[in-house]
Amino acid sequence: MTCPIETRLSDLGHALPPSAPSRALFLPGRVSGNLLFLSGQICEWAGVPQYFGPIGPGFDMADGQAAARMCALNLLFSIRAVAGSLSRVSQVIRLGGFVAAPPGYGDGPAVVNGASQLFIDLWGDAGRHARTAVNVASLPANALVEIEAIVELTPP
Image (cartoon, rainbow, N blue to C red; front, side, top):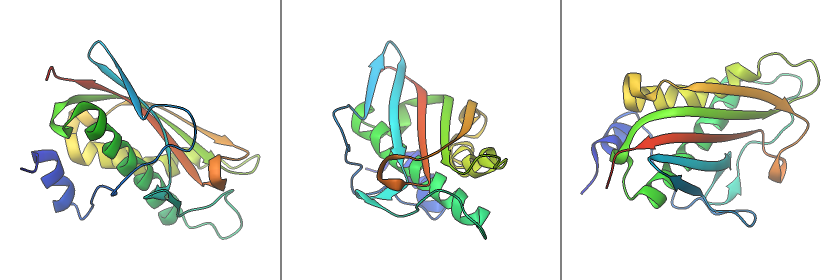
């Protein structure tokens, strides 16, 4: 049976990826108390990178936000894998966003909005979160964006 959040995700025209494999020796997430700390996810689909950095001339903000949204979809996959259901999320606490960009690029936060907006669309006010968005020189697999998150869970 599909949970209400997955139904809402589908209604928004999105789907969870078939997998979100780790690229190194870390867990997709770790629960401590009622918090789920999620490892960063890059803009890949089933382990295949889709958007590459760094941002260059002619960069399309819509593509950047799509890359961030893909990271968020991978985070949702990890939430379901670790917590058992997206319905266990009571609120999104924090997102950390990393954008591969050259020095002086000032729109990294606008790129990360692609991930933030998806969580707000899914959980409403409970999807609003604290956030950091920074530019970096490079990311794993030459990805354009990486997003990490902390969410609060209801008891199983």
